[in-house]
Amino acid sequence: MKKAIIVFTKVPKVGVVKTRLTEARGGILTPEEANTLYESCMLDVIDVALSLDNVDIWICYNNDGDRPYLDSILAQVSYPQKIAGVFSDNGGSFDDCMQYATDFLLKTGRADRLADGILLIGGDLPTLQPYILVDALNKLEKLSESEAGRKAAKTISTAPSTGAAIIEGSCQEGGFSIVGLTCTTPFDFHTVFYNMDGITALDVLVAKAENENIPLGMVEQVPDVDIPVDLASAMPVIRAIELAGKYDDTLMIPKRTIKFLNDVGLQSVTMPSVRETV
Image (cartoon, rainbow, N blue to C red; front, side, top):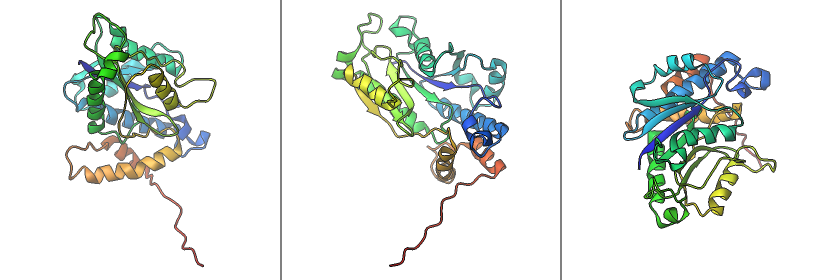
C-alpha cells in the first residue's frame, strides 16, 4: 500500500488562527502570541510526520492562506526536502475542505492517485508522537487487507487489492484529530463536522463506518488545542514529554512549542487540594 499523511492546516496569520485562545474571546493570549503558538505547534507536528519512513508527507493549507509565507516557514522543518507536495484546499466548509484534501491524493481510486491510503492530521497537536502515526498507518493497512475490508470496498478496477478501512484518533468533546482511510473506502466527510442535529464529529464518523460495514480502527487519543482549557491540559503532558524524551529516543520533543511556553511564561495550575475534616 502506498501511504501518505496530509497535514491539514491554516497558514499562520495574526488574528486568524487560534482566536479562541485570545484575550478578546476570553482567553489568555494576545493575537500575536496565539499566532506564534500555532506556528510552533504546526512546525512541530510536521517534523513528527517527516520523521517517518516510507510515507509521503503533504501539506494542505487554507485556500486564502499566504503561500509565500507558508513556504518560508516550511523551510524551517527538519527535512523540508521530504515534503512530497504543498497544495491549498478549495474553500467552503470544513467538511468540504477535508473532502477536497482527501480526493486530491486518493482521486477516488483512479490510476493517477497519489496514495492508496492516507492519514489526515491537524497542525495543532503538540503532543503527537511518531509511534501514534506508525500505529495508525499499520492498522489502516491491516484492516484494509482483512476480509471485512475487502467486502466493504468500493469496486475500483485500478485498485483491486486495496480494501476499505477507517482509522481514528479521538480528541476532546467527541471530535477526532487523526482520521485515515483508503481509496476504496465508501466514505465522505459530508455532515461530519457540520450537521443540523448537533451530533459529534466522532459519532458521525462511527455511524458512517457502521452503516457501510467499514472496519474501524482506533489509535491513542491526541488532543488538539483550541481553547484555554485545552492548552492548560496539554502543557503538563508537553513537560512530561520534554523530560521523558531525554531517556527515550523514540519520543519527539515539541521544541518550538516548549520554547513558546517558556518565552511567554505560561504554566498550568490547578486549585489547591483542601483536606476535608469530619
